[in-house]
Length: 264
Image 1 (tube, rainbow, N blue to C red):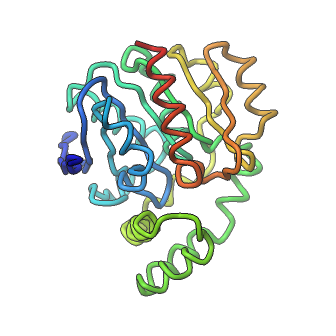
Image 2 (cartoon, rainbow, N blue to C red):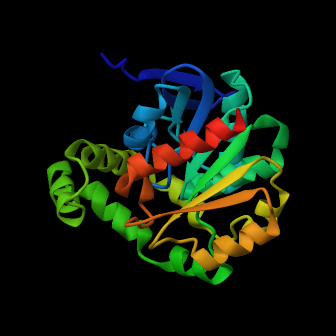
Image 3 (cartoon, rainbow, N blue to C red):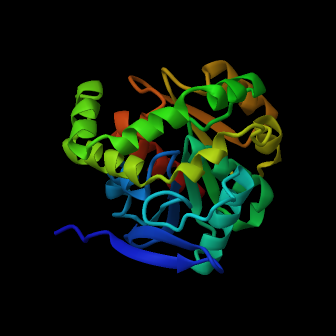
């Protein structure tokens, strides 16, 4: 029988981060995207927990973690990850991040090179300055307000129509994560983001960049990043958009496990 995910609360000195944790072995910390939670990683994390100590934190302002009034820029999120790794006494974990979590993971890897054994960036939010401004000026906040005012069952039904291939349990977890995301967390969308080319150039840990065939990080940008830093490997997963962990969880878990084995 598969062991359940354990819920833990980690005090980072005035900020409490909620994590789900399971497994044993080398530590693997997985960072979700905006409007997500650690629970959204479970289709990818379940098979990985057979070989790794998998830690799934909820970012500040998300899930069951604390939500301070301010402090939602990428530097703040990266500080939380560094604090979490140290508080849990994780020995040089592999850091995996998707979307917002991907850029956060890259910032951690650039700023604290001795902390990590490796980093996996899953279609991170590597956006041009123009695209950052477009996203910030778009209706993301209004869409979130609408979601918060909409009954859970209606959100689930709409999500099932949009993503008929996703399991019902995953859709429910994503809807619950959206409803638990505090509005203050949207401040992460405020430009400017950390300059991703400089961030990637500064990473010294082995790095795997994973993109789908309909990604935010295009194949051309991925090739540019590989040229900027020879430690970056690139893998492309077919039939996957920006929601790659939800579109192709088994393929992503296989890539992460293989990357981790190569670092052993």
